[in-house]
Length: 402
Image (cartoon, rainbow, N blue to C red; front, side):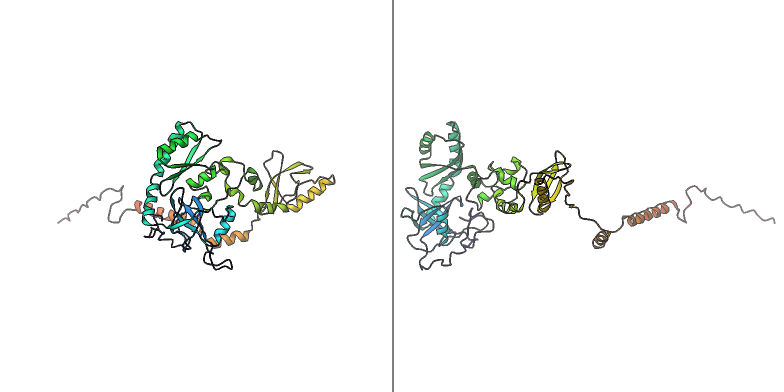
């Protein structure tokens, strides 16, 4: 089933992807993986591995099926597989030798109990699947109302209905153990399906719901992260992060999984720093360690409740430690000056490059314009009378005596 941006061809394969690694929007299949080694033989045998990884419900669930027909399937093709007392429809996610690595990672044995892949999904299979998917939202709302009426301390996160509509899987989260035997009976009579209850954690629930993280990107648990490891505040302390629960928690309410991404790098870098250097004795008092900067190889110390901090190099810290072992105390810490000196040459070069101009020249021009405007208003026009002048008197022409 393709997304709205790429469309779907007649065979049910996303038209925009063409098996080239998924569309640019990523909406066709969550937890998407492209098999770059699918066409490269990794073993000496000429036959390819006969188990295929199939994803369901836009990649939120994946399972392995045996390809008994030996047909070649491309990534993104819709196939019909064995389900619980029926069939289900999913999308081919991986083929070839990489499936062995995925099975080893998930600890799945290559046993005869692996379910079979039946055929390519036809138009009838896709129509039944779309009809079942349309019922999931209404089923989820009704299931939550029933669980609330029974006063069960649980939250139903998602409902997945099999393509043929014979089975429904209810994913729920709960802090404690829940007795849902009565709930299963009500669900079976209400929805007329086989009911399977599957408990998931808060991180898996966030991956199914999806969202945007504080980094501005889509959540890792809903795109590529499948193995959820425990995260504690020790990882934040090693990375000099403030222990702020609101900033360190993700949408699941737990500590962010990305706190473990750079932890190994910090642990390797901290091996170069001296051990047991939390306190340094000086004549001015005891200096306490505040933080470690692995990028600049500096250790920051401060006296008591003072806000001023002194950055020390690793060599200087070891010197003070050796003096303290001998019973000596240095007079000062001799912190590193991190402010770069400013020179007149740098400032002159900066002015020349930027091309700054003085604002005084603009002020002089504006003053000149204002003065000209004032003078133009005060000086009268030559053909007009001045504002305070009297009108001209007519001249008297005395007659000449005859």
